[in-house]
Amino acid sequence: MYDRIEFYLDKALAPRFDKQFHYDQALNISQEHFILDRVSNIKVKKRYSLDIPQRVKDELRTVTVRDQMIVPVGNLIPYPTNYKFEIGLKVTIDGTEISSTPTTYNEADVLPLNAFKSPIPADPFHLETQNGIEVLFGTGAFTSSKLSFIRIPQVILSSTTLISAGV
Image 1 (tube, rainbow, N blue to C red):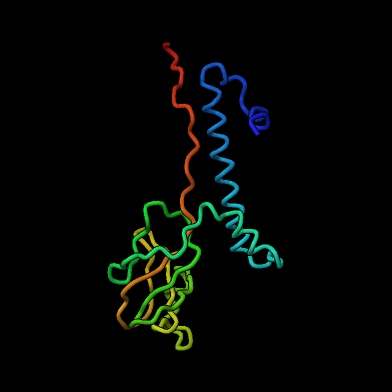
Image 2 (cartoon, rainbow, N blue to C red):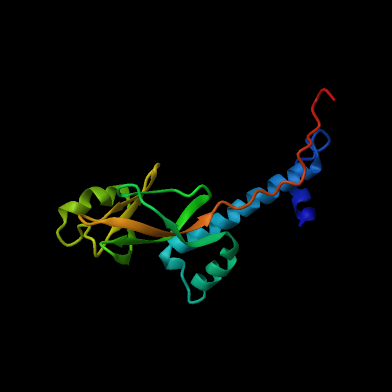
């Protein structure tokens, strides 16, 4: 793998910096692209085949956190420190655990106006905001949540000694 990365490295910068730094940086970028590619397969429904859901689960198994219990603050679920993408959310409203449906800002404004789609405790929606995940459920007691998500992968860093220009 290092041979492939070395092929893409900028040779003009290599004498000034430690080559290992460039390898680590390239591995981190490729790791990020790999995760984004797999998550986009989940979001684009038309690209599904019979084996895609299981393949994506297998490939992202090491960075997936399942059913982490999070206590909500009002109707807001704070993000975990290592949160990257949401996979699924189960909320407990009035003592019943229910899967929540993701929504967007555009849909969230229109949902209360539609009598057939308005959020109720039996069919809650959730919206990702900058402060956390906001759960829209109408009235009821929102007591707990279980969040399944993809965590931020561990950064590959084996060398931190860069050679400065003055040395």
